[in-house]
Length: 137
Image 1: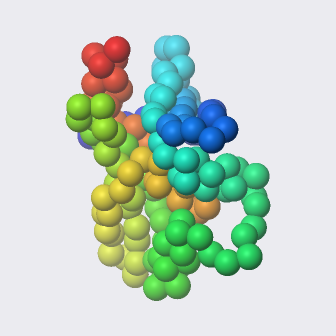
Image 2 (image 1 turned 135 degrees about the vertical axis):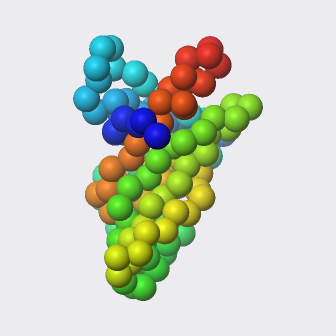
């Protein structure tokens, strides 16, 4: 599976509105820098913004809890991969490692971004998704 590493390039927040927007771009483009824009929910956008700005909350929120569970059980978040686009919906997987064993967990791309920001793990987009995005315009 060919893939390229991406990074969060923009988070577009619209006050008191659904949806919000997330934009990823290639880290090391081969030609022109490809970008991927996704619609995300307000709560996911707020969590990503908290991660970007390193804002602490008095009690753990959902993404903090998920990340703490992985760490507390001795696991490590290795990477996330956005691997499919089907009828306008993106699909992603988190890849975790514990004691030499690897695990793949289905997730939404917005959750993958929030967790990889928290865990300083890379995020990738497969060439199949780039192709589907180009054909989806």
